[in-house]
Length: 614
Image (cartoon, rainbow, N blue to C red; front, side, top):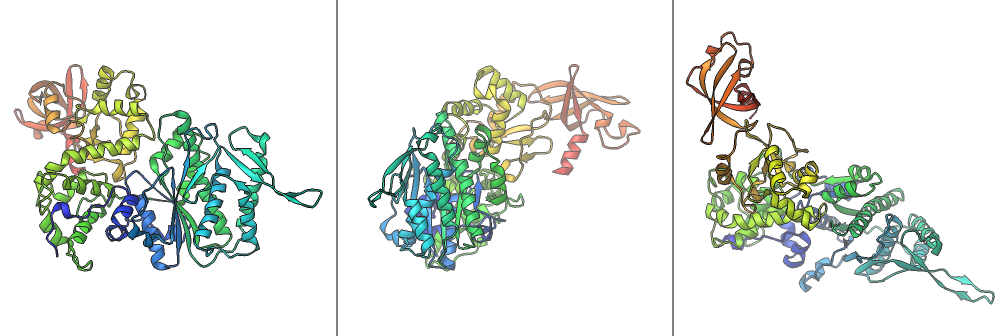
């Protein structure tokens, strides 16, 4: 075992593609953790063909892991990675051999191309036909049997001529069709007719283009696949809210790409081609944007029936057995190992690398509470620690956490910004973030509305309040907090919807609080100038006991306010004599339930009930 410091730990890269390109495949595979309940066999051999999840959940990583797993089972397997609208770095020369049976390419579209289109399925079918032909050539014709059906398929596809680059396919405004015919002298002539692919172009031979695509699909369904496994992996489906025409065009492109992938897999399945498949990653927020901004064509039926969602919530536990913590432990173990075979146990690593508590919180709890239970959070955490002034430490001490926390928070906020780009303009994103900057970490809906009305009138948060805060909840920017029981609700823990009510509070995610200049100390200073609100937990001092009421006052950050407790709010049972339960002068921990005629009504029963739930 090597003695290492924080800066020596294998961190990887936030993006799996970059990690493999620059760090190598070996470290990536060794540190990869399969999410619990992810059915990989359904992707390799079953009907599932989509991997869905939010940014940073490991969709790209799972594609590369699947590719490696398929190759381990059959070293003759070939694959093709297609990145939508994405340029990628050249692989380092020493890594090239590892990718010798992997084709890497991108599909791009210029900003001004096909802006008026809303239907792209025929264009996508053509591009996949080209990809299949190009891959078969790149892999020395080993993917399909060279018979009359394959020859017919190639002949039809070759009639459609567009920009040709095996590594980069460009979606064009126009293509040319080579339709040969025989003239009266018996000579074969191959004229080229141009097809405008933009909307409303039926007069320019578009119907011939459609007919060729349908014929190519029919020919493909009859080809014979060899026994060499062949997979196409599609990734980087991105669209950014900005120029409305470009944004909507990209959403239409992605929507129809998803339909096309499902269509091709159906062709392969019905044609008994069991060892060929297209697998695609889908970012959840892009699907949400499609549902919000364009006609979906029942997209959810396609994705929900054929997707494997990436979820990392693990029985709601925050122990070191959580798969996200296992990623961290494994990266430490691999970094310590000298022979790539002998690794220390988790128990030994935890004992050396983590203190008993961090700010009085158990270490795995602390790390997970500052994360969204995504693999990328662990990469960000390690990188932040390695860039801190305590990177020479031989453990993740409290000093390491404190010195890296600010940068981790800033990087986390930038990740949320990126996710928001599928829904809002850059200006709207900044307005939203400014609403929360310097506010409070925990607040009521009423307090948030008051702040927006006072300082951010006519912003997107003012004009579209409910939609924005539900987006922010889904993205993990905010969660729910119930003060009486200290219950918390987060999207990444499986709680699907934000609760908007008087009793429930909104809470900014702990990892974002430093970047937004909020926190418990700031909350305390601000509450000294505020009145109590429904849902607040307060101390109630008993002053007078009547037959059906207890009168008194509540203390709230230095202020005193008249209050009462009704007999029905003392215990959940019949009370014969209220004096059996309360005594004059005692202080009770209660929760405010309403404001009535200048007094606050409090409940002791609701505090007891919430305590039982907690």
